[in-house]
Image 1 (cartoon, rainbow, N blue to C red):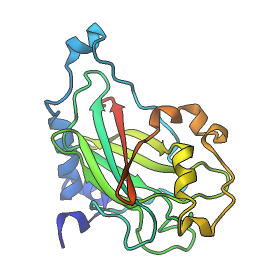
Image 2 (image 1 turned 90 degrees about the vertical axis):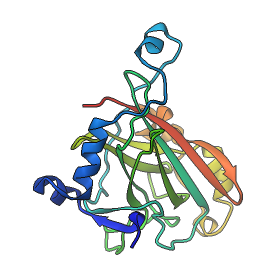
Image 3 (image 1 turned 90 degrees about the horizontal axis):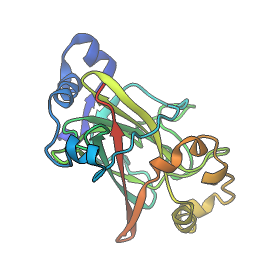
Image 4 (image 1 turned 180 degrees about the vertical axis):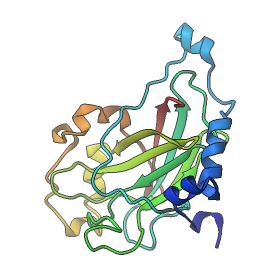
Amino acid sequence: MDEFSQPITRRASLLKGGGLLAALLAGGAAAEGSDGAGPAAVASGAVTCVLTPELTEGPFYVDDQKLRRNITEGRPGVALTLRLAVVNASTCKAIKSAVVDIWHCDAFGAYSGVQGNSGTFMRGLQRTDANGVATFRTVYPGWYMGRAVHIHVKVHLGGSVVHTGQLFFPDSVTDTVYKRAPYNRRPGRDMRNSADSIFVNGGKKSLLAMAKSGTGYVGSVRMGVHRS
């Protein structure tokens, strides 16, 4: 078992004061990477950081996930690499060893661990590196009725959740992806970003920057958080 498939339970680790997650969270509280501009640059206006808006956790959060990079568990879909950067919204500096927690539906719109679905597919944790970036390997999410395409995210620092949000995709990219299998087996996506009640309340600042990578995509975003 490698570091990307190690099971980890947040609640148990925190309550017992030990375990891998507790160590990760403590590391995030102690270290802030050297990359990025400092307070002087922020004060001068040369560099600006935006506090990432808080968006609802949603009904499908499961409090028992694994530290791993690949969260697909063999589920089909267009390959998606996520590069999620965490920075201090007050200084623009990258935050090393923050714990980024993501979950989303599979290509068919199903979430693992809820509504009778087994497994832990499309759920996982990663630590940010020295540049403040957590990297995940997943697939482009599918859709379900009443919501635009999205990924849920939490950021943990020093035993606290410092950000809960959702990440969104440009509709034009989703339109292209959904022409491919297996997404084209489920036509009729009923919600675009502009009509999504959560996106219109701050989702534009959580829109992933998308780039083609072979037959898949890389999605990147910088999340500005307060340290406490």
